[in-house]
Length: 138
Image 1 (cartoon, rainbow, N blue to C red):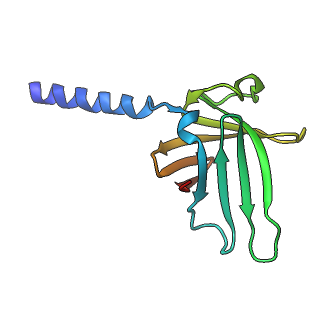
Image 2: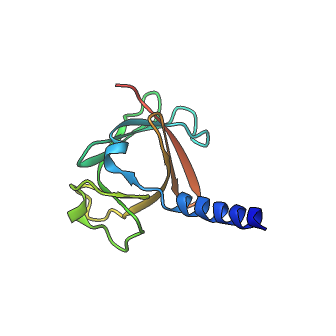
């Protein structure tokens, strides 16, 4: 009987720990390259995070100019209804990456769920698509 109680307690604590994972902006700093196989050949994405901005560089292929956009971003524990610009320059934490393009009044807010961040890999889920990024060494 004790074994069953301890097993159930262990499973509950494990589930709580999975849902409670918190990430920090400082963990994201640096450049990351997407390693998603669904992209067409010749297309890749490099994301660079610093304390103020998330910079996306889309490399579209031979003979096509790269597209670069700069985004305000912050981390949050929940999905917000609107982008909170006051948090963009703060050291925030959470498991949702909230971003919006800088200088574009028609930009829509993006909300991605951070699944994992290590020294070499970052996994973010947007809607139904999960992206795996690898850290680019300095």
